[in-house]
Picture 1 (cartoon, rainbow, N blue to C red):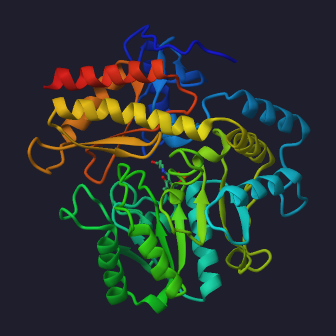
Picture 2: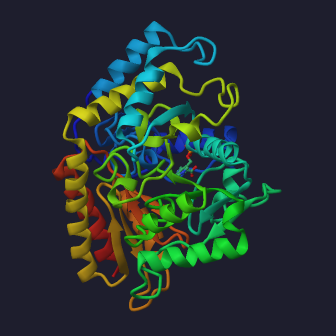
Picture 3: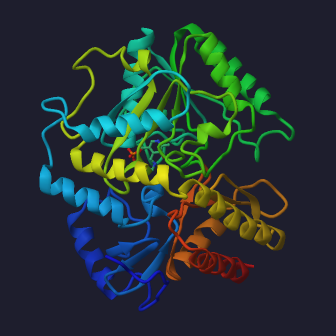
Length: 442
Ligand code: PLZ
């Protein structure tokens, strides 16, 4: 199933057929489920989404970092079709299948840490995070967990308490579970100038030691590059210092790589950019299975084995079709040039955005690693968040056929998570639209 890799504007976006569908959607679908851009999609390939009105959009969002390998990647489509025809479900905990084991082996091989590892599979990122909490509590016999300011970990009852933003994730959905403690993050753009990663880590450690007590903590969860927060890259040394503190105190260090993992940053995992940082557990989802719903937890064998038999599971977790896709994705990442391509994409985007930063003072910072790049908008000459510009830019890009995502605690960040199969030409086209938007605003 191929699709010309070209942006095409056939109607206004969303077009009339999408508008009709949006009416049906409003009548039938809960208003609790939002939509950022109501253009209904009927086909996708590579970096292009084709909507029901025949418009072709450049996808720099990939469904929030999911279709990293590109839409309808041939290897993924083939693996899924073969698996669907062979069998769709047995439940691994009833009668197992090889793909589960193969995917675990691949994850073990490529995840951070040069120690014995094991893995387990689930359905969603939030479910992986919840299972990491269960495993860490079982392994340590402790209850408390810690997370960071600006973090995002999911929408289930436990993970909504682990998010920084109460709204929209937790408003009215309480009571929230206890034993979740929030610590200050390293946010170089907004931290006092010159604060090192080690100093930012010391600030977080003091906070946790005073507020909770190191001996009470089962696990410390961190996104090595924060996703929903707007691609906050902590100062070098932050992760390593926290990791060392966890090790000294018997705390399980969990890297939530649901958004930053799986080749996105030019390495298999973003944790691997920080020398000397080896999280005990890593949570994965999104990009692992080319769009099929799958998540996992991988990490130290003795911690993963702390859970008693029957303690972990779920009907659909590690479904054969999702795992067939995951094996196809990971084997391609092993063999192809995907990791380098993520780095090249990052260089192209950041060069263009940094050039725009010199022309448009509403850009406070351009940041990210590899194919995970963001722009934080400010009121010129200050650090004040500028959500109005972010909103206007999103609207401009969407109506011109470029799918981008917003982010950030202050909703003043635009992030780009393009598929790694995108061409330079399409990227430039999308960034031209972005630049035109900035020019028309100023
Ligand atoms: N951990 C780091 O980024 C998902 C949220 C989309 P699920 N982020 C996208 C939305 O608005 O619902 C995410 C993440 C990190 C965990 C999760 C949760 O993953 O697969 O959405 O449950």
